Length: 161
Length: 117
Ligand SMILES: Nc1ncnc2c1ncn2[C@@H]1O[C@H](COP(=O)(O)OP(=O)(O)OP(=O)(O)O)[C@@H](O)[C@H]1O
Ligand SMILES: [Mg+2]
Image (cartoon, rainbow over all chains, first blue to last red; front, top):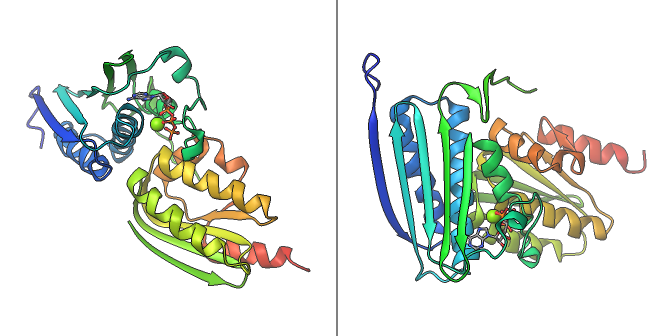
């Protein structure tokens, strides 16, 4: 619970193996951590989806489903701003610009549709990818819990029919 | 994720509960494809009533079934989308390919209404 206007700074660091069951674990951890800043249900839902995308990418692309890979997940809260970093030491990305294009996927045979980066970009206020081929990938993203749509401050969430 | 799959005539109704992510989609894909191999099945209806989370892996699984079913002349439908699922459907343009209904009954009525009058 927030106590009267007090600024809440906090952080978490988590190391998990690249196993698909950890996708759910990672998003639940971040959701519980973010709850300290009183996000709306929609905001929490967006953050969970973005975390799921980043962790899933580390597992299936970074480590190509090899569960001995390690994923580092960290998050910081500064007031109502949540920043999340997901790091893998996997294969990396040759061309980040191309990888970020909507609908681009290097694994169509696995029924991937190239939506992950697009979701992270649309569901968070800030989003960046840094990658080195052969060394790994770092995804950093942030969201401010102010009740507005991601990336568009002052536009409140409307309930869709 | 818990799943209940049942056949209603030529339509497979896939009732899901929980979170549709990569982990869940992998198992569900195999289950559905096994049923689709039974030749009386033509259409698939995904009931999202109890699904509170879906990411791109769930999206890819749905889109993949849509392509496979359509190739065999059937239809894929969805019903009872909750806001977080609807958001991913819309961002990926899935709502323009797959008809979405408020309830399972409305979806089935539409299918059956469309067959021989
Ligand atoms: N952690 C990573 N390590 C290596 N390559 C990555 C990583 N994350 C993304 N990529 C590359 O970027 C591409 C685009 O990623 P994105 O998440 O947008 O789509 P996808 O994972 O292929 O499909 P979807 O997310 O819709 O299932 C991937 O196909 C892959 O080639
Ligand atoms: Mg992805």
